[in-house]
Image (cartoon, rainbow, N blue to C red):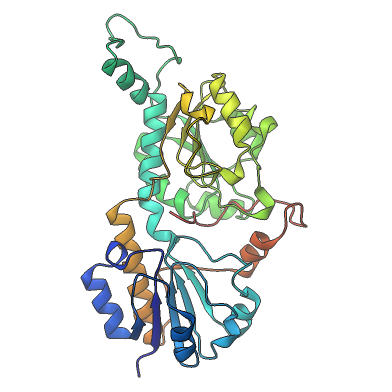
Length: 357
């Protein structure tokens, strides 16, 4: 007998995330109810709550998880795990309810744009484009040095990853042909695990001081708010590029803005403390920064990958198998996400997938 599936993907639009083929796979594996792009009303949820086994949702808005006695899986299609303030993870873990995130779908797209921003900053692509359009271009046969320092390549450079979760593991294969020396700070992974993946573990201070490219790939938690504070950012060498690709939560953004405006180092930035960013925010005027409006995962291929992961795991669960495609919530990670700032956690959580693309 097919499991009952509440398909409630809002804020995501079904056609944006699911191809016809993946929708057909999901319908073939489960009895799908609701399946509209507006949130399921409480009376509809109440009607089926005793029988529903799988909930596909854009964000958890269904109250006490204990009201679903047969629930086996929650599949989130927004890009990150539901907040511990909204979902009772203790009950989910004790009952064996799998909480699954589609975050892995965004890894390749985010990794690709991270490399693009890195090259745009180090090779000064955005800067030279602006100058060319204004009629103030710098031709290589007359001017090699530009107003924002020397351009440099990515080949053979020391690269630092802050975090070695899914994003970093998608980015590493793009950098391997460039012969980069990749060092990683991730206190949630063992040195043996990192070396097995072809990277070298390194302390955060040394990583910041020695890397030409620093990719910030850390997922936010209560333990790592403004982890990269002014003293940490001040360790970055002046000929380096910082790529902020996960969340502005992990950086003292005011300090970052001041240092980049002062020309202390270059940056590629895709995420901000408030989005949309204020029209008068000073980072908009930073010649040393290449800016993107949180678009690293915003493309049809990445979004359709979400639907593919969901269909894969619906098929697996319906067949009595272990879901294998989506990222599964772990108690240790959720515990740290739920701690208030200044809680007992002693080290920042930098290992998990990037949420919320």
